[in-house]
Every structure is written in C-alpha cells, then in structure tokens.
Length: 308
Image (cartoon, rainbow, N blue to C red; front, side, top):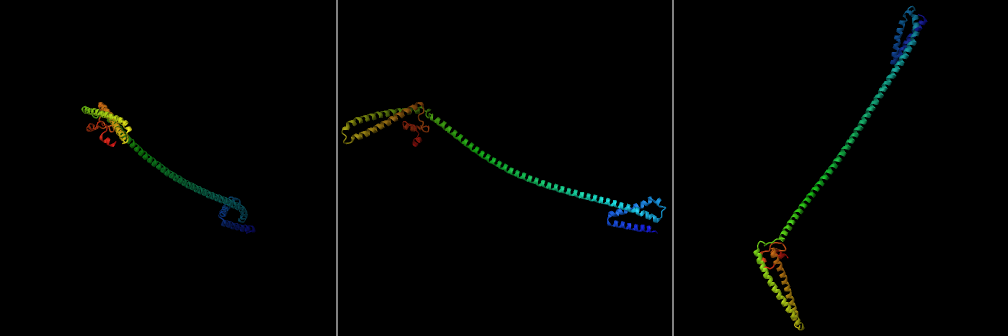
C-alpha cells in the first residue's frame, strides 16, 4: 500500500468519525449524516465504468476528496432545512399558541361580556320588577282612594237622598196640613144643620137686644152721675165726688165691654148667615153645640181657650 492510499484510508475513518460525532450531537445532523452516505454510494455507481480500470488504492484516493465537499454541502443544506423546518414548526407552534391565547382571551371576553350582559339584564329585570311593584302599589293606592271616594260619595248621595226624602215628606205633610187647615178654615161645621143655626141666631138676637138695653142703661147712669158730679163739686168735704168718679168710670168700662160683646154678636150673626159660625178661630175645629148654646157669642173651642 502506498503513502497516498494510507492517507486516504486514514482520512476516511476520520470523516466517518466526524460523521458519527455530528450524528450524536443533534437529530438534524444525524439526518444530514445519513444522507451523504447514500449519495456516496450512488455516485460511484454512476462512475463505475470509468473507475473500473483503476486500482483500489487510486479509487480510494480519487473518491475521498470528492465525497467530502458534497457531504458537507448536503449536511449544511440539511441542517439549514432542518433549522428552517424547526423555525417554521416553532413559528407554527407559537402562532397556534398565540391563536389559542387569542381565542381564550376572546372566549374570556365573551364570557365576561355575557356575564356583564346577564348582570345588566338582571339589574334591568330587578329594576323593572321594582318599578312594577311600585306601580302596583300606586295603582292599589289609587284604587283604594277611588273606592273610598266612591263609598264617601255613595254615603253622601244616600244622606242627600234621605234628606231630600225627609224634606219631601215634611213638605208633603206641611202641604197636607195647610190644605187641611185651609179646608178647616173654610169649613162650615153646622151648615148641614140649619135648625141648629136658626136656634143660635134667635139666641144671638135675644142676647144682642139684651146687651143693647144694658148699654143704654149704663150710658144713662153714666150721664146722670156726670150731672151729679157737677153739682157735688162745690161740696166735697166728705169726698163723695171722688167716689162718684170711680163708680162712673166702672159703668163706662162695663158699657164698653157690652159694646164689644154687641160687636161680637154682629160677627156671629154674619157667620150664621154664611154657615161658618161654630168653627174655632184657632184650630178651625167645630165648637161643641153645648158651648155654642151656653156662651153667646163664642169663637174658640174649650181646648184653644185654655191655651190662650
């Protein structure tokens, strides 16, 4: 074996050792280390006709320097691709994580917004319920007030109706009383008994004649006493003139009472003619026949006379 072949043999294991070291350091380098081996196997196959004539020592010397740059380039390319893939994978992982975080944030934001909306809706609902309760209370108070006013109005209407009915009854009773009183006032209690009225008329005429005669007698006595008074003016030592004056005044009062009685008899005779004699001037009730016959004339019943 020549020195060149030995160097090639020594370099080849060194490269193999370096390839193993690269394979141990990282998975990417391991992948890159495996790839040149295949390339190294394929490359001699293509060049097999040209190298068939050379000796094994020359072949090792010729292929060793050619395989080293190719393997290194392939390894670098593989490392670059592996790094790119790793970076891409890392970026994808980060993008995925960022997207997941974004989705989580959106989910949390949506949940927060939903909770906020729920709380707001609950507050709105509670507020609406409170307002509804308040409105119901107000409506209830309004209804109670209206009912109380209605009851009060009904009571007032009832009292007014009772008062109106009472006044109507009172007016009706007063009207009946007035009508009855008017009927009594114009009544003729003994118009259906002309014989009794004729008897009363005869008694009244007799009483009038007797009264007129008494009036004439009283007037004559009073005049005589006046003449005697003039005669006794000059002799008044015993006071007879004063006594004469008193007696004369009494006679004149008696004559006045007789004249009043005579006037009443005239009124009674007038009433006998229109049939109204025998009616009480106070209560307009009929005077009893016995009283009419006993007292001439008479214009009140016993009851009304007692109260006058």
